[in-house]
Amino acid sequence: MNIAASARERAIVVALNALKSQDFLFHSRHQSDTISVVNPKDKDQTLNETAGKELELEAFKTTMKTVSILGIAGAVTAVVGTPVVIGMVGFTSAGIAAGSLAAKMMSAAALANGGGVAAGGTVAVLQSIGAAGFSVAAKATLGTIGAGAGATLGAALKKLF
Image 1 (cartoon, one colour):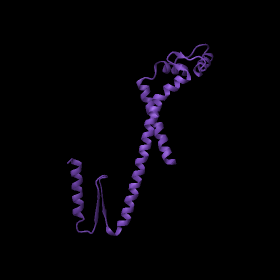
Image 2 (cartoon, one colour):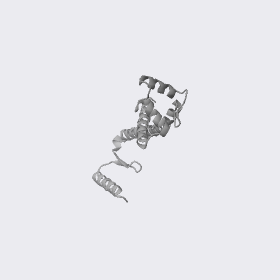
Image 3 (cartoon, one colour):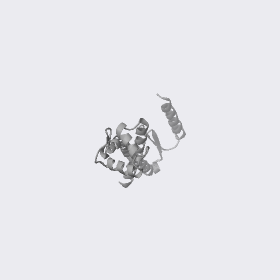
Image 4 (cartoon, rainbow, N blue to C red):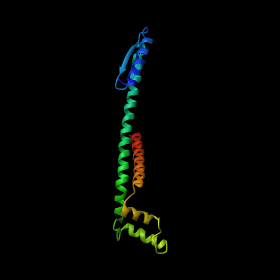
């Protein structure tokens, strides 16, 4: 028996002894570690309140499952999907693909900067990611952003439906 269980049992004994002289019914639920003390006169009202709270708890659990699943999906999608999309745009490990959107972006950046692509600019950063991938820190950041976006989407969908 662990310490929490023995403390809970002591609390139960104290509550039972305090109410011994009263005409009360006791209802114990071991799964949720709750004890309801029910006055027979108010039994129906108390049971209805308990059922309502159980339904609220079940709805909360369902919402948390949805938010968690979409959070994980968002994190995976961000970490795995972003490099794939960057590659599809034309920023590859072999360089910028001819005729791609990346080539058009590079051309526009070069014209805007007098013939060269600025270091640290959008085209340079995307090409770096296309060539070498993300660093561990960047993957962690992307995962966090993706998880937050997925969890937010999950919470919003649960409110709508």
